[in-house]
Length: 550
Image (tube, rainbow, N blue to C red; front, side, top):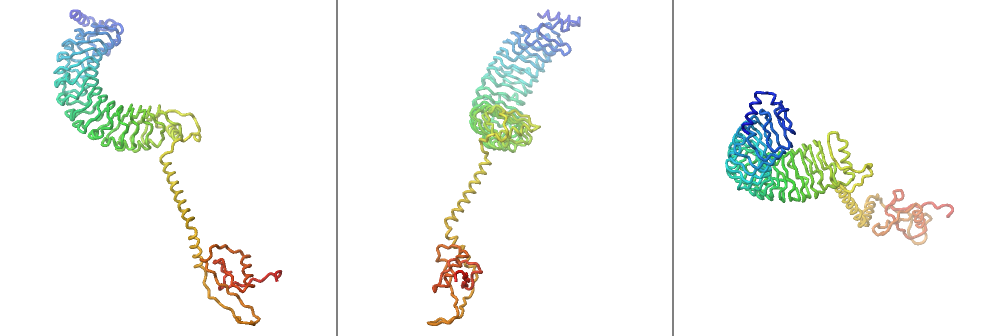
């Protein structure tokens, strides 16, 4: 094999035309001699081709049937990218890549590799990305990665690594490592601080989809430059206030798909620079007011697939005024949002409420200042007048892109309002209270009507003008009496002694006066409030009798 490779190399130098794609490109492969790029994806290959242009820089042989890497790969010393993913590789011989000192990306993911050692990657001093995801690795030997002094990204996800398998020196030598994937393994506890000491420049750590169950206080303390921490699907039920000690600079945290029965507000408070937070698929029923207090820089929030979530209090995001994107999706037990839930979020641009259990949505629930996209589709919304107004606002807005559940086309006056907003309830309460007060006043007047009538009559009496009583001349005596007529003085009857009084008409007054003319007895005046023209020193002057009665 070595002899054949040598002859091919010499022949390519002597006869330049042999480097053309027509002579060296296998069937089902695409070879670009200008870009020095060869792609043999799904080429049904069972070995690495040996007759390619030796100057190629990118070689992609993914999704084939290759079972072993032999020395043929050393023929391509100019490679910067080698992709052997999705094959059947079960072993990598020592020093296989000894001549690939220009290689920057090596993708060996989704094979059947079970062991790597400190001799596996000899020669890869310039390697930046190593992908071993989806293999059968159960143990990382000490010093396995020491040749990779420039490595920045290491993907060990979807393997069988346990805590014991990741030894204290398993990551030794990776001084420049920025991104580490340990997700979807068999880790049961977070490795000790010493495990991460060789990689203290980590910016992103993916350690979710493990059976962690608990996090030790200060487990990440040495990772002071960490900006992203992914702990999804780790069976976590609680985190303490010191769990995130030392990593206060992280900007993205994923706690989705765990067993939290409440938002871990205390632990989150220390993450002052956090910009992205995901807490979906947990066990809590309520997102309480100020659950995310202290997270003043939060910009993106996700809450998806929480089967038990029933309520989001309207002050839940009260302190997160810099939020730009909110996704509350696929929470089937969440049937309503309180009015003004998103009030005060002046920078909110993207809001998704799709696939929940919302039966009512109206325009007062949203902050419209900066909103650019709104998704309220796939909800069992009642087509009432509130939803009609919301749709109308969306349809007439030129700056908002939206996705909404449609309703039958009705005229606005045909929408049936099945709900009453809180403000309408308050108005009804005020009206009921006002009616109650008026009724109480009316009943009071009715109860004390007698006293009020007496008070009015006494007031009228006090206002009537007072005159001195005059007695006109005329003898009073026994027999005789001269021929002059005498006037009759009629005293007022005390008003208070009268139980019932009726206003006298002019004819009633006339009858009373007539009776006074022919009777020696004094007649009482029943009405204590006569007009002034009828009162003259308490004397009634006789009205002339009609001629017909003389």
